[in-house]
Image (tube, rainbow, N blue to C red; front, side):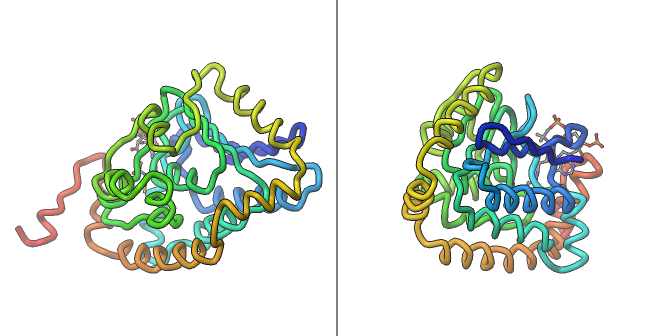
Length: 256
Ligand code: COA
């Protein structure tokens, strides 16, 4: 299974485990993520969700082969949307451990986390524009709110890559921790969070995260545009180029 779940001391750790594809997330993995988060939300003994990748890779983002399949269907897949909507409706806090590249949804999902720890190996990139797509996961709303419009534009539209230190400076990451210690460090913090009074914690978190309805509405608005872009010749060329390991030939599309 490409998603592993382990519970210990009130912390449910959800781990991407698809090293051969750099933890790219496919439909079955989105389904498993939703199940893991829903089970954690419903379990009395789970107080905190923790999401992690593997040493050297957090996630390469959405599986690009699946993007091609979604393009045929004409919609962002249901499992992706269910995952995004589940993320936006969590009551329990979410802690992330990033020890390598976090690409696309690997970065945008972090905007739904409450604490993010990164190692110096981390790298944050959202290459939506390069793929002919638009931002998702309500990142067009949450990223400017988190780091300010100018920095968010740099990341979402210019495709800038932020290293761990820059991500900490802009407020995407809480602390940069060496790879060897990052997971145990984050676990200690998560355990501390798990010992807080859960109802008060959920209420405080809900107040701090602002309007859930606004986030859900933005997820849907982005998804409609995303679905339209998936079908575009630009996006199809970008996906094919990635899978064929060649540079995209956008100029050809305009008859140049
Ligand atoms: N979807 C599908 N397959 C992916 C993938 C993705 N998002 N990211 C990586 N893979 C696959 C590669 O095709 C390759 O498969 P193969 O061994 O069968 O050829 C394998 O994972 C290893 O990837 P590779 O690119 O060789 O690893 P790397 O260490 O050189 O680079 C990344 C790692 C994550 C930087 C790079 O794979 C990457 O940029 N991936 C695409 C990220 C992306 O654009 N995601 C979509 C965001 S919206």
